Image 1 (cartoon, rainbow, N blue to C red):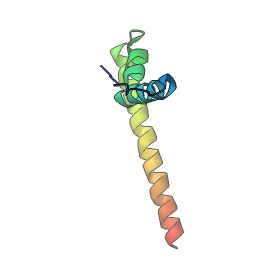
Image 2: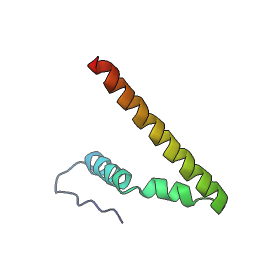
Image 3: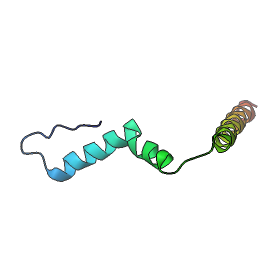
Length: 71
């Protein structure tokens, strides 16, 4: 559970901004969205594999760009 201690005299907007940042860092909203609807195990596997392939392609593109920059 995310918690932000408000200092005396601190504006509400500043405390709210810090709270939102903490919630984002903790991944609470993304977890809630993920759990909002049931996802079949086969769909989970497909999403996980797609994410793995995206990361792999991105990594390859970066390494190719670095190699091209060295030339």
